[in-house]
Length: 268
Ligand SMILES: C[S@@+](CC[C@H](N)C(=O)[O-])C[C@H]1O[C@@H](n2cnc3c(N)ncnc32)[C@H](O)[C@@H]1O
Image (cartoon, helix red, strand yellow):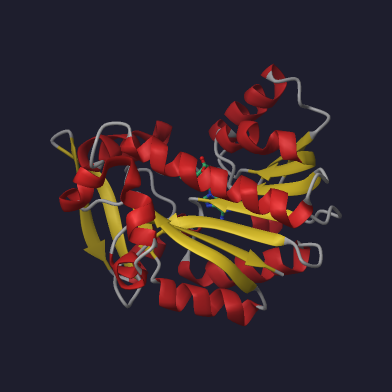
């Protein structure tokens, strides 16, 4: 089923075809193939949390900001039903194509819209918000957290992947191409918010400090049941190879200072 959201105003995610992200990964990953392996570990951890929270029950999942639907394939087997939301029409159409190719039209409802505009009477057991919150206006983060809290079933899981500040405070960058490589330039919150919608291929990114972000999540009413960092960029740790993510996550102080990305699993 496909539903058109209201007021999406021709929103276009500024990283067309994920060119900025893919180039950045090529430039920064600490060994070839690391990015994908690190993400795979996180997806396995999420699957294990789903299994330990819901047992063999097939759950109702919401994938907020599903992009081209790459994670629908990962999680579909754990679900009775999925509602996937994507505001960018081109990315929404790719997700739609994927769903049709997999023959999952009856299981997956795709909505072309933003969370704030959508009303659904489906109460999800889990909400997945993967690499999305770093690209939304600063004043919308709390709105989305509250919206997700209200939508979720009692004891439902809220699963968030986002960028990690590695400092005490949040900060913002604009990411763009210059001479075929990626520049990441620090900007203030005002400029970040102004760049959320732009047609200059500038990707604004909000890096969340675990201290501020976990406080915000708990203030919404959630209990944090696990958090982990991934996509370590520190080349001095590359000798650890596949073990690098476990190594840093087992050291509480180091954990706060490394890792470009952050996984938080919270429960209502
Ligand atoms: C980096 S992509 C992540 C896609 C997918 N979740 C994944 O992990 O592959 C970010 C996606 O969030 C979407 N997005 C941006 N702002 C949003 C909002 N306010 N509500 C829902 N989705 C949003 C973008 O259009 C884009 O497809």
